[in-house]
Every structure is written in C-alpha cells, then in structure tokens.
Image (cartoon, rainbow, N blue to C red; front, side):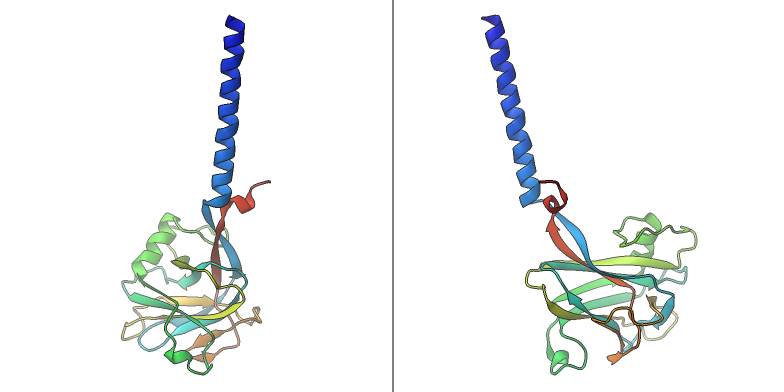
Length: 215
C-alpha cells in the first residue's frame, strides 16, 4: 500500500510539472513581448550637424514588419552633457510628398540631451550593435525612442524627424550619418531637403518572445 501511494504521489508531481511547463511555454509564445530589429544602418563616420532651432534632421525608411514600436538614432554628443530638449516625430510618407506637412504624426516623443548621455554612460539601453564606451569620454551614443506599437506598419514608408527649440548651434547634440547612401529605400533629409547619405539608425518592431524559442 505504501509503494502504491508513493508512486501515485510521484505521478501527480510529474503531471503537475508537465502542465506547468506547458503553461509557461504557451504563455511565452502568446504573451511575452520583445523587440526585434527591422532595419539597421551602421556604422557612420559623418556628423550631419546639430538639430537646433528650425534645422530639422530626418530619415525616410521602409518598414517590413507590423508593430513598429521604436527607432534608435546614433547621436554625436561631443563628450558633453547637453540639456537641450528635443522632439521626435514620425509620419507616414516622405518629405516632398503632397500634403505630408499637413499630416499628423503617428508617433511623437519628447526627450532631453541628458537622457542620451545617461543611457550611454550606464549602458542601460538596447544598442543595435555591440559598443564599448569610454565612460569618461562618451562622444557617440545610440538612443532608443520608444512609442506604442503601430499595428499596421508593415510595407509602409515612414519619415522621422528630430527638431529642437534650441535657438543657436553649440548647445545641441549632433547626429551621425554615413558618407554615402547604403540604404536605397530611404534617405536623410535636412530641413526637408534630400541628402546623398543616410542617418545611422535602427528601427524596431514588437514581436512575441516565443518566436525565438524552439517548437
């Protein structure tokens, strides 16, 4: 009788562990979210200048996935702590298209230059590529701008722009770009004018963590 109860107890424990494992597996596949990179343009060795006053710096890109939810931009910090405020805006389309100036942004993010330096120094940010910083002399830093997932972003053309109310150069941070145009699906724009190079940027979409687990 004792052996029967012992085996029954072990069997119940085994069933419980199997059910628990199955529940965790299906919850990860269905509900746990993570970020994945859609487009990555890097490295860059060109400083395209500061975003200050009316000087807007932007980039157009094509999104291949649904749930676009973030864009990382590589800033040139000059090793200083900038207290300049910035506004990031994301729109459908590209500069020069009809009525794009009248379109409302599909996402907006306000941030401060100090946040960029803090993220670089602490390394608490999802850099799209492995980067090692001299924490006492941070000159370039990736910074991720997060926004609510755009569910129907797949196969859409977007344009983002960074602007700052800073009235004069010297206070704002710069943005890093390429020396040529490696990304044919988009381009950098300065004050709405197309350039022959791209910004260093990465686009992120939200997906289920279970996508990366074995079936």
